[in-house]
Structures are given as C-alpha cells and as structure tokens.
Length: 453
Image 1 (cartoon, rainbow, N blue to C red):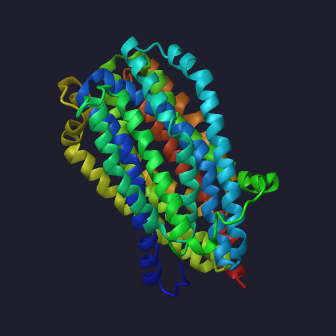
Image 2 (cartoon, rainbow, N blue to C red; image 1 turned 120 degrees about the vertical axis):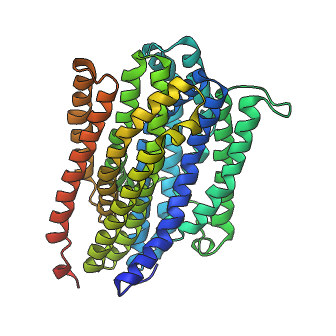
C-alpha cells in the first residue's frame, strides 16, 4: 500500500485490494455453495441435511473466526506507522490463539452436537446427514483457523492477490472431492451429502499447507521471518487481540447466528420448505460476499491511513467504498428479480422446491440495500479500531428486534415462514441506520480531518 493524493488513485488502490478479496470470499463461499448444490442433485434429504449442518457451522466459524479479523487493522496500522518489527510476534500469537479456538470448538462440538440436532426434531435421515456432514468437516477446523491468521497477515500487508490465488487453487480440489465422495466415483465411497463435509476438510488442509509455504518462501512475507523465532504464549498480546477481536467476533456471530436461529425455528416446517429457504438464503449469502469484500478492503485502507494519521484520506475512502457497495446492490437486486427462476434451478430439479425458492428470493432483494450500507461501515469502523458499537447494534437489531418481530409475523399472521424473512430485513435495516449514525459521529469528532498532524 502507498499514500494516495487523488480520489482516482484511491479508487485504483481500493480496487487493487478489493478485487482479490472478492474473489477469495467468493471462492470460500463457493465451497459451501457447491456442497449444497451438489448435495441437492443427490437428494432433497441430503440438501436439507447439508444446509442444516452449514447453518449450524457458519455462525460458529464466522463468529469465532471473526475474532481473527482483529489482525488486518493491527498489521495495517503498524505498517502505516512504519513499526514493522512487531509484526512477527503479533502473527505468532494470533496463531496460538487460533489453535486454542479450534480446539475449543472441537471439544464443544463433541459434547453438544447430538443434543442440538435431537432438539430440532428433524426427519431422521436429515438429522443423520447433518451430523455426519459436521463430523467430516470437523477434521479441517484447526488448519482452517491457522490459514485465516496467515491470510489476515497477507491482507494486512495489502497483498490480497496472494490469498486470492491460494483459495482459487483449492476450489477445484473441493469440487473434485465433492464429486468423488458424494456420488461414489472412481472407487470412492458413495457418502451423499456427508461426502461434502470430508471434501471441505481436505480443502482446508490444502490451503493451510500452501499458505505456510508462501509465508516462508515468497516475498514480501518471507522478509518478516514469521516462523524463524519461537515466541512464548503472551496472554497480554492475546488480550490486545481479544479487545478488538471479541466485539468483531460477537457482532458477526449475532448477525450470522440469526440466520441459523431462523433455520432452527423453521425446522418444524416440511423438508421442502426448509430446502427452499436454505437455497434462497444461500444465494443471498453468495451476493453478500461483494459488500463483505468491500468491508474487508476498507478495513485495510482505513487502518493504513489512520496509522499514518491521515484522517481526511480515511474519510474519502469511506465515501468511495459505500458508494461502490450501493451501486452493486442495485445491480444484484435486478439480477434476483429477473432471474430468480434460473437461480433456483441451479440448486434443484424438484419442482416444488424450485417454485417455493422463487418466492423466498423476492424477499432476498430487500437484503441488498441494507447490506450495502452496514457491511462497508462495519469494515470502516474496524479500520478505526472502533468495534464495540457494532457489537451492540448487532445484538439489538437482530436479536432484540429482528428475530422477535419475525417470530410474531410467522406465527400470528398468514405470512408463515416468510414472516421470518421480513423480521431479518427489519433487523438489517435498523443495523444499517445505527452504524451510519456512529460512523458520522466518529468522523466528525474523534477522527476529524481537522485533527491531522
């Protein structure tokens, strides 16, 4: 990264960082997409089971993995302040923390997975598929979290293209092993949707190994000599990471877990409704990768400018990032509206599932504008290391307002399962408004351009 002097230079630098992030996020998401899509081609029970398993896994992974999103702003601010000697120590401590998180998730899953699935009252076949899918995926938890640390290190240096190439190289492997293990090809066992869990775990190990080699052998990463020195565990450094990371992780958990909660509440509906809901939600999440990538890119450039105390440049980056996200959301809304039947047909041949999915996709349109505002602002606030308000807004907008409102609409009106979607839309809109107010206050008071050196 480098200092910019005009808006055109800022747009260029943001896109240099943003585009690889988008491809990376789409590639990571594509693993879940192909898990669900290829399982749907196997059977409706398999797509329902894999969808349930993914819905349980993603909020946990996103929330706890979100703690590691403290790394890019920390690294970017160190680079902006030209204090690079502290980088290796911070990365090693983050790896230790990632391993601790991974072990913790594995133990908790071993204890609570069966009771959670039992209480969902799923059809027996769906419950068994969801359980076995998560067991298979669990073998890849530790390498996934360490990879996230190494990827955050790369991104914090502004070298997002490298993490993009790593993830892209792994995606074909995930698809190939899905094909082999779901359908039992070339002598591999026919596991159905369960096979996608094992295929994903294999992919996580692959990107972990590649990332280790890149950090050790490829510049500019190799010059930091991350693995050259052994550091003891520093609880003080963990505290620094957690002070920033925990609010980020909890805010992401509150946001992603609301979708899992809706899935749990909808488990009383039939398999067709569950499958249709999950397909529509999966596609909406797929489109969310764009504002999410803009958010991650903004975190990097904002932190870089704040570290150098160039608050006016940070302000300009904020305006540019939000504007790009809003324009993209309008395009996505048109795609959903005019191509919703084609989108649904990607996932399933079941005519009942396809028809109901097109109805859910109409509601997904309303996610777009709110996501285009709240996601970039979250990234901007992280760049400022201002994370507590996002945590508060996520809790209130989703769990205090969005979910209860959706429950009321679903159970006390004729909207049925669509009521939950209206509740989610309401929560997203409220969150966007609150975060925008916080950002305007922050940039006018604490990080005003008038306070530059």
